[in-house]
Image (cartoon, rainbow over all chains, first blue to last red; front, side, top):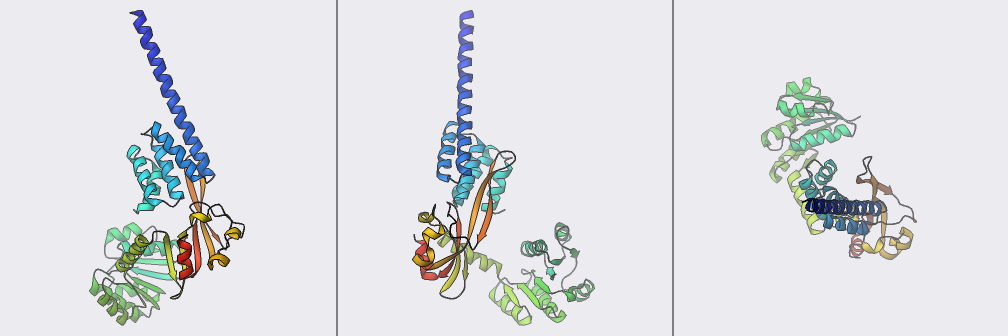
Length: 106
Length: 228
């Protein structure tokens, strides 16, 4: 019984560590993406944000950032798709709705 | 300061009134609908609920002293013709009237409109043009041969300076301005960008991904540039 509990605890610890690791990875990729965006390296920024979205599909922040980069590259259709996705995941994302309104029209 | 009166506060009239006020004009906004007047009252100099075909009421409001009149009651053709005529009788120099059809426009011109606007037709043309040539954002035709165009920077220009590209010698056009997007992080660390326009950019200015070029030149040369 005690053995089983110990095993469960270890499994849980490993799970938490995996989640932490995943979160850190995503954060790092977002940070890198922003770095490339600030340096007007839009294609590299897109690559990083896309990589992040593969790990964390439900992160509104990633899609908002993809929208911003696409808009900066004058790709309004792609940008509006990304802003829409960001708003689906986080309807309160003010910057995403501001940019989407600018592209699509109020 | 220009004094303008906007008669009719639908979407078209209200946006004209708002923009004129933002540009520093004194704006008197008139509509019969109390709600519409209320909506715009904080933005314009004065917003009044009145019948825009009532000559006495308009004179009492000082409409006859205005420099510009915008007659934006297009859907009600009879009213828009009557109001345009009244503005002409008041001696207003610039009368801009909104028309819903070509015949409506002809009548408005005859009764005194100095400019007739067809918002639906004009928007239709603009939308079609933008769909046919998505890289052209604005087009000002200077003559049948020459234009000023806003176009996306061709891929082959990115990362190169204006001096290196040398569009005047190589393509026979001038880049008179560049619209740039400047990425930055907000106070909360979120990505965003500011838009900046460089008028008569210097030779060492580098073209970046996402730049919009304002190009002046011969239509044929501009078309060649667009196909790069």
